[in-house]
Amino acid sequence: MKLMETWVKAPFLKDASVLIVGECVQSVFPKIWEKFAENKVVLTSCPEAEGFSGLVEKLAMIIRCSNPKEITVLTVDGSQHCNMLHTSVNGAVFVTETTTPTKHFVITEKGVLEEVNSESVRVGRYLHLIERCIRECPEVIRDLKRLSLEQRDATHQE
Picture (cartoon, rainbow, N blue to C red):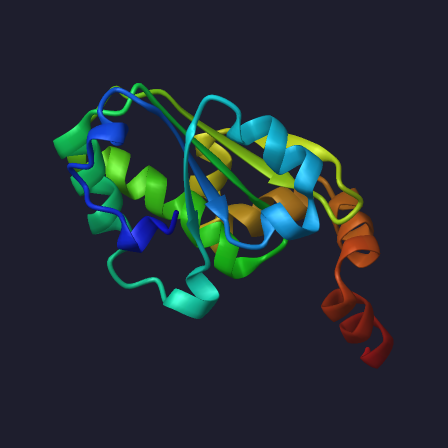
């Protein structure tokens, strides 16, 4: 069911384990989706198609009105649009001051599942901190070249 089309007071959300998942995950990585969807209320979203406007507010309203037991986010790694789901959950947790446990997972292009913590999501908003990380850990750029067509193209132009 679509996140932005779900009533924030829907009875099935009350005290539920909620999975916020990128819309494309089910079709691209069906086995991972199936594993994560088990025993959870699944709310899908595609910020690229639906826009980002209202995501934090919608999630905050779900938290305040339905008090989910936990929230898990599952997206494709490297998608700037999917990243907005992680950022929006963090934002909703912040504005509601909830203690609801949250977990963040990404799936790499090779189908490898990686858990990332909320701090990683927050650091992603601060480019000067990322710059410091790159300076202190230059092998990250090597990994980026392997993962990002954009980075490979930029490297060839220099």
